[in-house]
Structures are given as structure tokens and as C-alpha cells.
Image 1 (tube, rainbow, N blue to C red):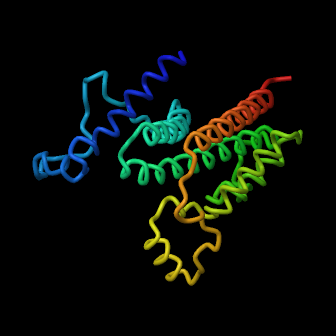
Image 2 (tube, rainbow, N blue to C red; image 1 turned 135 degrees about the horizontal axis):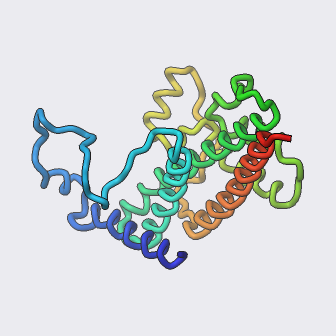
Length: 237
């Protein structure tokens, strides 16, 4: 299983990098395809098993969406690490960080919902205003209320989440570029974040991947506990 996953990551990483390295620029790839016509659509049904299902129903969607963001983050880090292309290394890092941040938001919200439902047992999560936020700090503080143990791992996760929040408090640091962040801050009469990652530094991608996987392991465990609590609360006495 691990070998198959490794092969998938390796193949996908090479395909992603190939887009840029064949001609050195994504623009060249875009110039080689036909012009848009009035018949073109974004979503076209297919009979090919190599294409994707886009399931927006409740049956498998929660699993696929969360899995998609964390796996994309890891694949992008693997692509960066194996690439000799500076454009790949210095641009793919932003969607990698954003995808991981969005994974954290999704998994925290899913766990909060299940823990909350296991206690209220009336199907109502509207009372929890934190579910409407995109702020990781608020979500993490809410989730910790349901964790009935504090050990070194929880403390270490808490430290890493706070480190992430320090540089990306509202989810825009890696989602938008500097000019757009500056423009939005001006329009909203806010100051740009004081805490910026130090400039002109190379960041250890292997270390980042390890931390991503460690946090993934932790939050998957918490999500399992949340679903168990929810299932137990719905069992008849």
C-alpha cells in the first residue's frame, strides 16, 4: 500500500513539474492549445475510468475534499523537493501551504461538529458560532474544549498551530500575493501583518513535510474520536 502511494506521488509529481519544465514556462503550454469557442464548457461528462467523479453529495464528499487538500499539499512538497526548477520551488510552496491550512480548517470543523452533536444530540450545530469562522485560532480553541486529555503531543500541536497562525492569522498570507494583501488591508483600513516570515531564507521542505504529516496524524486521530463519540451518542440504550 505504501509502495503504491509512493508510486502515485512520484508519477503525479513528475507530471506536475513537466508542465513547467518542458518549455520552461506554463504560458508556452497554454499557447499550444486551441482558442476557446462558444461551445466550450468547463464540466464535460466522461466515460473514461481515468477521469474524476466530482461528488458534492454528503455520501463521500467530506472524505474526498479533506483528503484532496492534504494529499495535494504533500504532493506539491514532494514535487518541490525533486525539482531543479526555481519557478517550481518558489511558487508551488504557496498552494502547498494554503492547501495544508485549508485541510486544518476542514478537519477541525468536522471534529467540532461531531463532538458538538454527540453532546447536544438534537442535530443542531447553529449555536456554535465558531463554525462560521475561517480563523484557525478560534477553531483550535473550540476543538480543544472537547479534548479531555492534555499531554506532550497536544502541547506540541498547540505550539505548531500557533506558529502557523503567527504568520497567517486570517488565511490570506499564502492565499494572496503581497500586492493583493496590501490592497485588501488598505481597503479594510487594516495594517499588514507585522509577523512576516524572514526574507531571503530557504525553508527546509523535508521538515515541513514531516510536520504536515505529524499534524495530519494527530488531527485524523481526533476526528476518529469525534466520530466515535457521535456514533455512541446515537446508540439506543
